[in-house]
Length: 253
Ligand SMILES: [Zn+2]
Image (cartoon, rainbow, N blue to C red):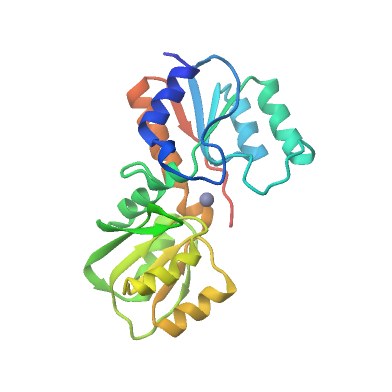
């Protein structure tokens, strides 16, 4: 089956409601390709390796969480940016990107998916720069130690999670926000959480965690954000009857 690209974009906008977000990059179609889509490749970041994988698979569309044209990035199409866009245009591949809408979607979003994988039933939202749902909180069914969460995260995500230990704090209430949301640890402290999980870590995160007695886990930006694009691809295949596949280009970051 195939779908008009315009219809695919309408469907995605209806599902992910990008109008509700003030984002750092354009959501939706970023580079225009062919007018119909029968094969879609989804991935985390529109890197050259992912574009090459899409070309190899004869994809009509590439759907990602991290696309292009970020606020504050330099505009000229030179260097790797030229190479990437040239490859997309030469192969008539539509580049479609959803950033915050794909973090926050209640079922398919990165945060919802990470919660599902870890068995955390979210019952409250966190908030960042006015965006509700950019992080989630849950009460664990069984109180855990920091080591237990570290091991579970590492096992589930296939990547060793970095743990800043708040020894003595038993984890009952946990919060998480995928990607580079280590700055939200201060909100986690305000919310009285015992532990907070994100993808990355800054130097200051260590001290904020230690001095507030909150466990912090940096589980990987890429590793925590694999699951939104993957879930969305599976959803689109079902809903639109087109071939969708998730391609993971691993990244240690
Ligand atoms: Zn991200």
